[in-house]
Image (cartoon, rainbow, N blue to C red; front, top):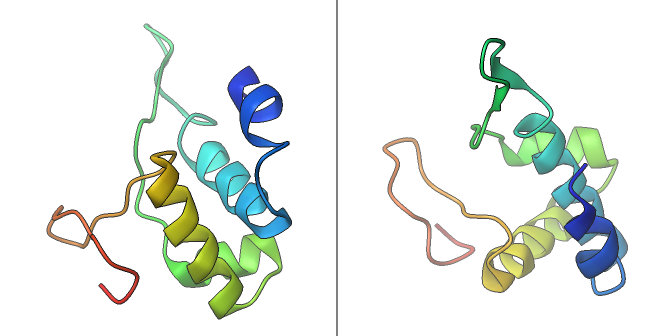
Length: 90
């Protein structure tokens, strides 16, 4: 786990926001894509349903957490065609 999550973000984030960030980190940096170089995943398609299941939190809480983390610039959200999502409704 990157130290920045513990040192910088944990004191600032609410419970659900931290949970979502931890799941995103696990689903990306937690996986080594290239064993030879040790390169880790930088992105993954994670549905709201997956986030709800893995965080144990509900739809609206997860949605707000995603929006907040995106506003902070900690995560980025894209649709299935790799277009950036700019609003929670998208």
